[in-house]
Length: 385
Image (tube, rainbow, N blue to C red; front, top):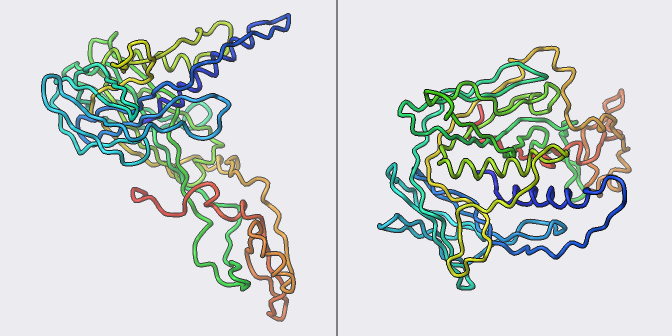
């Protein structure tokens, strides 16, 4: 799931920018009170057909580098209204996971947790939604590249409100294939392939659609993403995993407000940013602000692949690689190898022989141009084909 923490941070940044840029003619330096930056953030949902993962953290100043502070050592439970509860385990700092769940549609659940400082929090009870299966995820040529869309339907007309998340993966190669490596003062054949890698990205945009204006609960070719034809993601092979979530009207409204705050602000005619809190409250202190919305629903998934062979041949001359500044190779004589390659930022590529077959030099380039692990991983994903 896309982290709500990033949305809150972006929305706050836009709000601050709106204040700072309010004057168009005369310079104005407003006195801005210190903003509280220690709100609890709840990121996750109750997965009615699998493992639930809840991340607890704290907000922090925009000027602060790094990740948000994790809320560790909390006691976290998923509770059925008037029924049993399930305790979550802290699997990583601030990350709490449940055993696989199988919750009945329409039953009501909430998240209930206690922080290490003794405060008590809970989300509102929410009915379990069963997300319908994805019919198709399709791609087609359109606009300035490739357009990816989703289709789904609910014959019972019970879903109506939809949200989608994307997990993208693409294959790529570095600028130069290195067959040598310099290890412990010796040149040897490279043991690990660092030319071909895979990168991934979790989409940050909020993708929503509702069928309430329609007589039937049908989503037909709703566009989720457009990839420009020059994009490096299309150069070799690209894959996207689409995750579909059925939402209650209340959660849909929450995500729509987040979308407006983070994606539709920037001009005088866009809506002003507003505070989005969600359905989680502090039971110990009703005045305390808590950020996040905890829904209860299952997840539907579908993955597609796009190979460069399926795309127009003429696109190949336009693809960006990200290595456009890595075209030239340096050459170092054998006698200079120790000095040249003792610096790990410089990596050997291939041996150079004279016309009598005698090794005389090595070609080389910067590590960032050779080692694809600088931008991804060289382990083939288990789902790759």
